[in-house]
Image 1: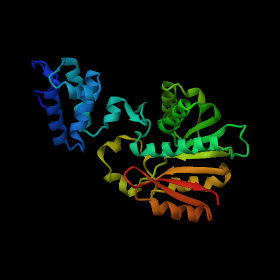
Image 2: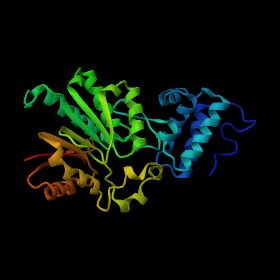
Image 3: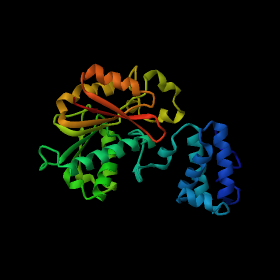
Image 4: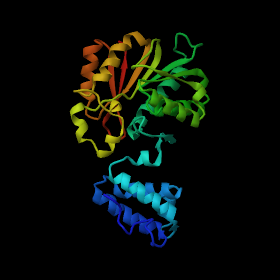
Length: 309
């Protein structure tokens, strides 16, 4: 499917306005089956003319040059083929920060911000409570399956803003060296690369951690074909949670007795329909351990808090 022949950037077509291009792009993406055609068109046009989406909306009469119109049309065609808008723009907003994104890692989701909120609250509480047995050492935090580094970097930046980063040791782990490279790039962009260590590993290296954070694959394998087309451009490794969706999460649970400090806590992102399943999984693999499920802003199960008895 290609953009209309008289679309933006076509030979002989006069300079068009943002309003006209938005209408054309929205209709084109709607016909192509985009789930959010208007929003996609707004973001892509803003990217093409190198301004924010709100600027595009505020000036529908503004002219768009031929080069920008051609870029917009090319991106519309790629989006119509299913490619995620975040990959086309090259970045994604998360926790108030901009992250570089590409096919090396999963695109950060808004629901994962709940995990960062809970992690930040946990760290601040532990640093301020005076309850740690060894308060002279840094608080040890690990982000398992870091991907783009969104969780580790967002946490580091938030702690820096509270003058608490020096008291925390953050480790970011991923099985994919390519994903870890992307995480490093995002850490450098937000000037926290010197405060995060990056390690290639399957789930966890050795060590004892006060806080284990993980947004591991939790989509049931049989449900992957029914996901939106855009997810087909993301690494399957970051989506496939096995037959029941909790295969990899379960493997991490098996490791917790050996890697979680005595008073440590694990915060694990789960699917909105996995609140009951994660409780059963913890009870089966870690008898006697506590499992509480925190809800997201939509009131849906989102983060499991797992701790020793």
